[in-house]
Amino acid sequence: MLPFLFLLLSFSFIDPTTSKSTIEPCSNSDTCSSLLGYSLYTDLKVSEVASLFQTDPISLLTTNAIDISYPDVENHILPAKLFLKVPVTCSCVDGIFKSAFVHYKTRPSDTLSLIADIIYGGLVSADQIKEGNPNAVGPDPSVLNVGTNLWIPLPCTCFNGTDNNLPAIYMSYVVRAVDTLAGIAARYSTTLTDLMNVNALGGPSIKEGDILSIPLSACTSSFPRSASDYGLSVANGSYSITASHCVQCSCGPGGRNLYCMPASLAVSCSSMQCKNSNLMLGNVTIQQTGGGCNVTSCNYGGLVNGTIITTLSTSLQPRCPGPQQFPPLVAPPTSLGPDLMFAPAPSPSESGGAPMYRPHTSIVPASGSIIAFPPSGGPSGSTSSACSLNPFVSLLMAVFLCLFMKYAIALPL
Ligand SMILES: *[C@@H]1O[C@H](CO)[C@@H](O)[C@H](O)[C@H]1NC(C)=O
Ligand SMILES: *[C@@H]1O[C@H](CO)[C@@H](O)[C@H](O)[C@H]1NC(C)=O
Ligand SMILES: *[C@@H]1O[C@H](CO)[C@@H](O)[C@H](O)[C@H]1NC(C)=O
Ligand SMILES: *[C@@H]1O[C@H](CO)[C@@H](O)[C@H](O)[C@H]1NC(C)=O
Ligand SMILES: *[C@@H]1O[C@H](CO)[C@@H](O)[C@H](O)[C@H]1NC(C)=O
Image 1: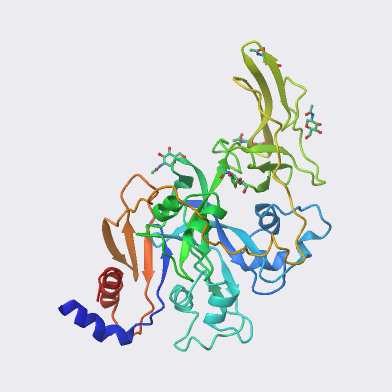
Image 2: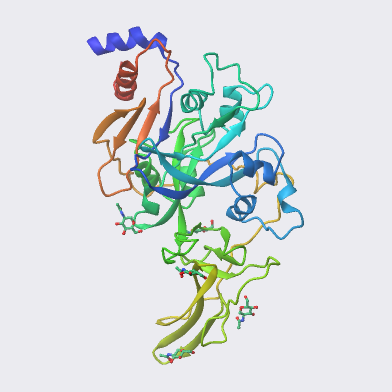
């Protein structure tokens, strides 16, 4: 009974809005490509969105399967509320994966909460920006000097680039009031169970403001380490420009193989013909034989020392593959059509057996977050219960309360 009393007494110190965020512990030099789910807070140029996240405007467009062949596409104005996947490099910072390179230069009348909640759409909290910039933010966080360069520690995960042993790229996603976990799973071609495992959730309930890691199936390359685009990985339904804008590689919609071909941009590129053949990068010939289908393709092998590597491969397959497809591209959006506006993810009428719950096995407090390591086997997701606390409450108490509240909710009071 004592803990209950303690909880009730302490309740007045706690803001009832607690949000969770999935974090992944890491060791030092790890990095990966990751995505952020982001809705524009206002109309913004492509280049302005890219500079908010210090990413390349062309990768921002290709990640979202937007056609880059439109004139002056970087100055195209995207409409407010448009939902975009923003590519960011995910790095290991103080033992947790975060965006290491995203910075924001403060403008007149910016406040930390405006930057966190509006400009970065809830992907970060005002407290996290404050903690990440102890010298830039003074004792009164409502007063920011104009032009201050703030590091924005955005959440991201790598999980070894795999999900259930298949290639994946992870997207950090801020839950909206209309979302259900099943709806998110359906929208991103994954399952409820998988989302619960990745995010170490004990059940399917999620709250507005929670930050989930969503695995998107991906196509990976096997370029040599010496390639400047080593490790290239492209999410299902999108494409990527590589090799100094000479090659474009896509993933999906039909398969999980990276498909590369010459990019249609007007640049001078070295030869992209496979040696000892008349095939160009991306060409595939199929030949029905008695033993099956003889498939010969000219594939991209990475940019090594400024040279586009092409490799000819021949394989005998049981059935002839269909033609290689590039994912459908969309024109740069100018207004929110029904398919571009962020569609709510309602609960689909889904049965498919009881979801498998995986309880947390161990809990280690670290720098104000609770990191739970789920059992080995699934991807090692972990959840940080970021209880918003009154500064009077100590960290230890915070950890205890967050923990206790989790279990208290399940008990009949
Ligand atoms: C990471 O993935 C690679 C294959 O992509 C695999 O060989 C390796 O064992 C994985 N490492 C861990 C720690 O799961
Ligand atoms: C890739 O995306 C398409 C369209 O969104 C979807 O139908 C397909 O199932 C996805 N493939 C994988 C392997 O997730
Ligand atoms: C080979 O690839 C080039 C460049 O993509 C294309 O123009 C050509 O039509 C392809 N040829 C065949 C036989 O597929
Ligand atoms: C498959 O096709 C390639 C080139 O067209 C040829 O060199 C090879 O001998 C063929 N293999 C078989 C088993 O037919
Ligand atoms: C790259 O090219 C330079 C000169 O062209 C050469 O010295 C160097 O050894 C090359 N490196 C590799 C990895 O091939």
